[in-house]
Length: 168
Ligand code: GDP
Ligand code: MG
Image: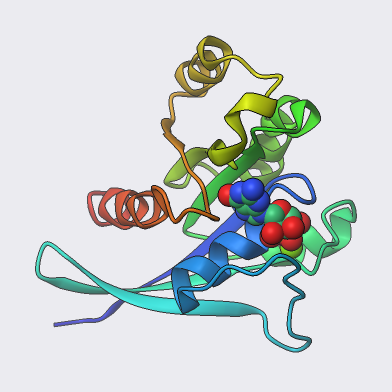
């Protein structure tokens, strides 16, 4: 059996929880102020999907979301994408379209999932559930509400992406 390895990029505005999500999924931990280890480009985790071993390599940005030249290099060769916005940050929700376009421009139409993170802070939200679902529908994406902090739906996001990738 050939081993399947998938480069996954986690994309969205600063502070939505991208680094925390990668750390949670690959190391099983959550810390309040995660700082990316210098020199580490990605973390990985191996899972079984339909009796196949899949190695997910989750690429993180070092908080340089605003710099196009850096993000372009980061997207190169990506085979799956997580688009993340935060429950407590309306701008991060409004920016999803532009993140999707950036990724598509670089790598085309790859398996992608939309995630609303920090669902544990739902009482502080400025985004109603209909508009979040509307966005997912318009972009034709599977939508998950997640809390990296509470470890809610994080595994499901990556399992879905791996399955979607294998179905190509
Ligand atoms: P990034 O800039 O997108 O990589 O975001 P970070 O992973 O650095 O997270 C930004 C802040 O949000 C940190 O203080 C995290 O601890 C916090 N955070 C991440 N995920 C969650 C979550 O699900 N719930 C809550 N309450 N805070 C979170
Ligand atoms: Mg980060």
